Length: 359
Image (cartoon, rainbow, N blue to C red; front, side, top):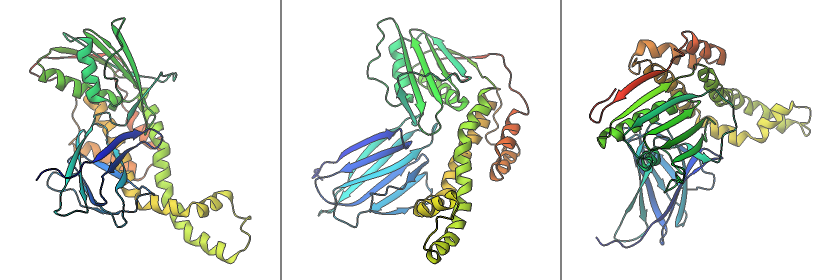
């Protein structure tokens, strides 16, 4: 059928909230907006969104399948979602307005490998860093293209008047950093996140292989980055774990507030729980998904640490189960001890990649 309407859309990372905002707008009132992806991502509650959301369980390759049914007359809908770094591909947004015959338009959005990173002007932080260096028969513009595949907010053209480009990025969710310095025949990436380095290694190697460009990689993993990175995750884990205690207190505190005209005697923390009870209950409802996401970040770090040692433990239940047990009975000190019990090799490691092969 000939297209009878157009969809305007916006898709951008909100670095303050560390979520992607998807906005769709049509010239007609909306009936349904559906999201589909074979990559995992978590929907985040949008207060201004009055649509009824229905979520389907992951099946048949769908990691996300959600339907927003618009009850009120509106031609615009804003959605929020948080992606998982390292999981990249397409997000389909299917828009069905109230019209006859029923017609749908599909918008395809690209999720990049380091999707939660946003560009910053510079990095002043003196954190310990991991390094990966790519060298080979590639031009600076070719590496710029590969970086734009990996990261959002990469300029269309590299400002390489002196033959070398430097870009800086920050992970909006965790606050980890990434620097990219590249030109003809060499590119150097530094990050305090081992997982960020692992994702770059995987994606750039794949892109070079597809284009039959031989590259060589050298990497140096700094063991000091491990506890420092876990410290970035800690406040978010602690917050989610404390939500249950706060949610359990809400009913008792509501009773006190109903019985007492003056509740100024309450501890400030308890008063804050009462004032924010709706937000706490809303977040508590999403707590299992949020915890699963945070656990995934920690387990990915553990897997990526071992990848750089040449060990694949991703499917080794005996190696992963102790870490999962620690996370479910979380304390920061115990998790750090688990990671650093066998210090990583301080020396640099190197590996070669051909145009048709892997590591």
